[in-house]
Length: 80
Image 1 (cartoon, rainbow, N blue to C red):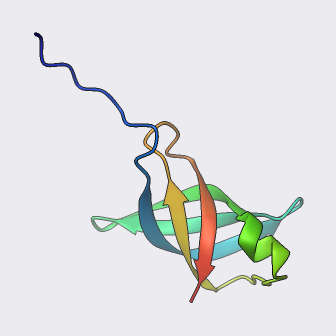
Image 2: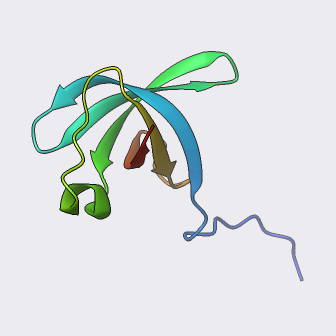
């Protein structure tokens, strides 16, 4: 049996970032820092945060959940 590298779709990783800009439709530009390099991703609010009316502003520290499929988008799951 050959050893193949497969991506587990349920495997998500969490990163910490800072909100840099608000966009329409409850989307945000989030800046994350990976190994000394800064990257900007597009983040949207998770359902629980929307349900409980948690507001986000520019400069807030947030937790972003991402999948290995699309590294330019993520879901904001927590505000610190």
